[in-house]
Image 1 (cartoon, rainbow, N blue to C red):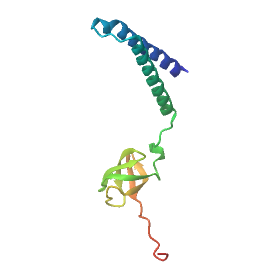
Image 2 (image 1 turned 45 degrees about the vertical axis):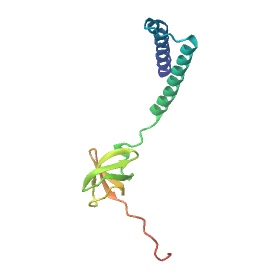
Image 3 (image 1 turned 90 degrees about the vertical axis):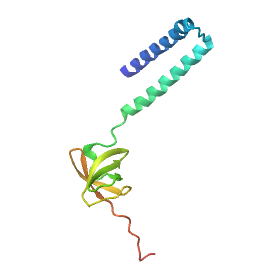
Image 4 (image 1 turned 135 degrees about the vertical axis):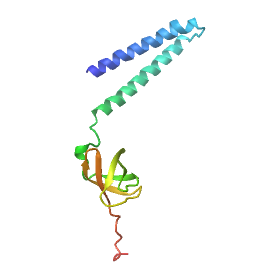
Length: 135
């Protein structure tokens, strides 16, 4: 409830500042905005505040996607060649990684085996093997 109250109060303060600027400050510089222009600007600001409040509220409710406690077993993609150290992308986040299975080229899939501090220990995923008997 406090977030809604804060968003409402800050939105009203922004609207009041906009109205004061358009009605008091701008005419001193020879800029006159008609009343319908002020109403349009206030509507745009209200819509903007509402959209960003809803987006922010949804973002705050989401659980973190990845964390150190959950990293073991997650698959990712090598961004910077691991020789043996480099970067991997896991769920949109870049992580320092060390390869346990030798050099791994960029673009290859890896699986997290364990972690050492903030560095992930990874191994290359085996490419899918083609069933030669059925081909």
